[in-house]
View (cartoon, rainbow, N blue to C red):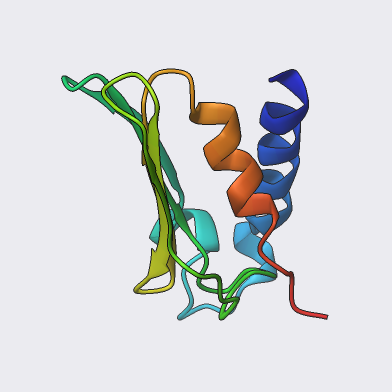
Length: 106
């Protein structure tokens, strides 16, 4: 798990912009967008990662869904220029792996 969390930290840091690096009328990426990881009472992980203005802006992927019962399920998709993943308590790393499989812009 440490590897995927380290990758997420590095990716996030790379998206963040210094206020001095954006134009006067612009807002830094981290003030408009971000990463949300939370839980719900199903229980489940909920992950939303904004892709706008990043190297994964516009990347595509087919929706992914596995439902093997209450203890083994996950869904991942993209829409509204966000990556969205939700899954059972054991799926956080898998969800992050799916995000990192999105092909960065070259």
